[in-house]
Length: 256
Image 1 (cartoon, helix red, strand yellow):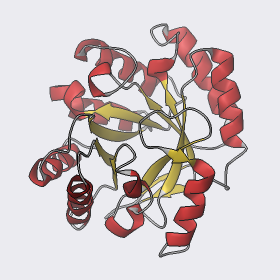
Image 2 (cartoon, one colour; image 1 turned 180 degrees about the vertical axis):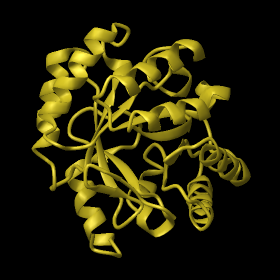
Image 3 (spheres, rainbow, N blue to C red; image 1 turned 45 degrees about the vertical axis):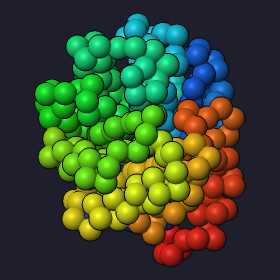
Image 4 (cartoon, helix red, strand yellow; image 1 turned 30 degrees about the vertical axis):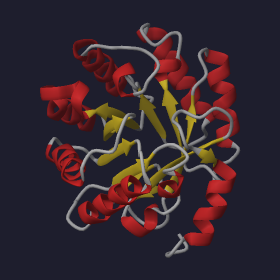
């Protein structure tokens, strides 16, 4: 498996990296959350995810860029993943494919994102072109798929991760909701199987309290990143970042 390096953070090598989300609705709240995350750099935070579907100014390009650039500064060199999570994949507001693609294109061009989340199904046939556009602008892509209702069969999980890589993803992500312990094991088994052949680093998780174990055992099965919280969670089952860092340290196989 190839690794992906962003601002000195290497994905796909060593312990899973910890990403902390920013979910405030306004400019000043976003920057305050960003400052708190930056203070945890090297302790329990490796990168920040800005969930712009929570931002009141998301559809104003000038406001989005201004806040993005300001967040970039307060993060003090920490990588920034920019995500618009659509309503259909568990986000804060609906967005059709055409509007979504235009928004991600602007994000890639405007210079504040190190990585951008690309929903596989929302991007549709334009996913590969979007990956190419991001690469032209020096932005890494995290292709993603989320199922907040169930855990698809292992074959479907593997198929989605393979398709993401085929479409040009730098990193491939899938998050699913378990209904039983066997669902959690199915997600972990699919991750381990795909990690053996994938060239792209993987991010996988089983959500909710039942799936919490998947957020700490990524190094065992081949998941390179996990999400923790300082305050507000961006998805069910996220653990406090400081506790997450402690558990990753205790369970870590590489010590990195």
